[in-house]
Image (cartoon, rainbow, N blue to C red; front, side):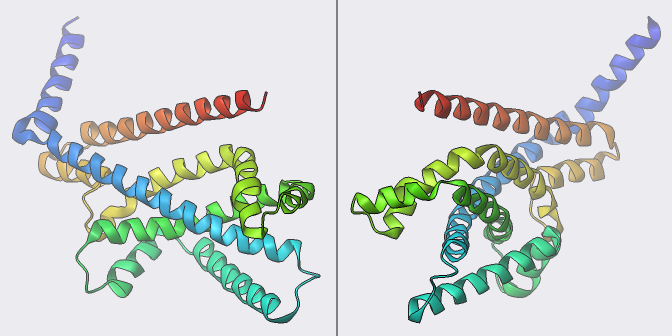
Length: 244
């Protein structure tokens, strides 16, 4: 009994040392806010880039035998640029891309939050593009013809008919990508960004106690992932019910 009491007292002292003294819990709160900002805006940027790249790639793949003239040349050019983008982004580590953005491309800027959002958004866009492309390619070609019969042009058909159907198909994979994005933001500390992981490491550096701050960071990430997973599950259920 005395050993259990001593253990609880030790945990309590460790908690007070790491989070209460010096209001160090505020570091975690500020870091969490930064992580959420990066993830949210990077996800929006990734979706925007992903849909554009997916539309270009799928349009090229579906009409590869029909591409002629100036329009065909432009589509081939954009498809080539998209393939280079996908190859480079998916073939290099996220942290290296972040360092290149911070120390080379935006070397004159001190806006670490913006740089982090752009870095993670561009990175996520490559994976979202392939996810959406697979969804678009899975939509029956008759849907495209139905859109044309309603008087919609190619882009209107893509926006109003094809992409919404593709979204339902790729939602689980898309949710997984956003979970990965959330966890990948933990490397933002490499450029001095005060994110959640960096906050936990700063507390550890001050208190010389690794267990409590790092476990707290891991627990917070776990809770966020569970919440995101639950929200996606609810959205999937809502989409399934709307099809009935």
